[in-house]
Each structure stands twice: as structure tokens, then as C-alpha cells.
Length: 110
Image 1 (cartoon, rainbow, N blue to C red):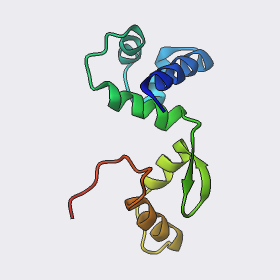
Image 2: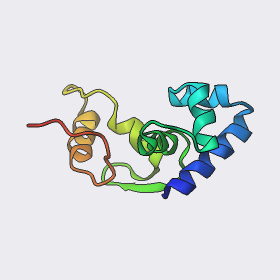
Image 3: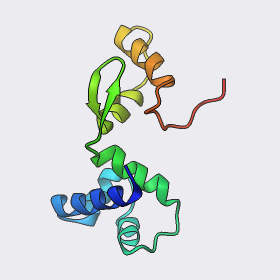
């Protein structure tokens, strides 16, 4: 997904949810940030913001080695769930997500 696609996704989210403030809460950013991005005046790291937009509102489908075809927001949710050695599903997901090409989260040094 390109940055232009992500900006369009942001515009659609604002239209769907009725306000920049609601979308901002969903993204974990301020309403001022949403306004600045839409106006093309955002001075922060735009790629990080737009990645978050895709993580929350995206509809792109990805192939998960464990769950099959899922949406990108589902992928993000699954890979950020806490590890539990008592849950076989979480163990499989943890192992698969660590090396997955869809995982854009920062990697811990081993």
C-alpha cells in the first residue's frame, strides 16, 4: 500500500467516523496531528503515522502461515498479543510472527 493509499484510507476513516477526533483516538494520536497530516503540514515521521493508519483501518489481506488469509489489522493484532508458553496457539503464532515478512515491528536484538 502506498502513502497516497494510506492518506485516502485516513480521509475515508474521518468521513466514516464523523470526526478527526474520533479517528485520532482510534489511532492513538491527537486530532491536531490528523489535521496536520490531511493539510500536508505534518512535521513528524509521516511514514510511522501512515503505517499506523494502515494497521487500524487497512483492508489489505495477507497470508498468515498459521491463520491463512487475514486482514492486515488482524495480523497486527495477532502479532502484538503477549506471548504465553501455556497456550500452544500463542507459541505457534509467536514463532511464525517473528520471522514473517508482514511483521514491520521493530525487532529485538538477540
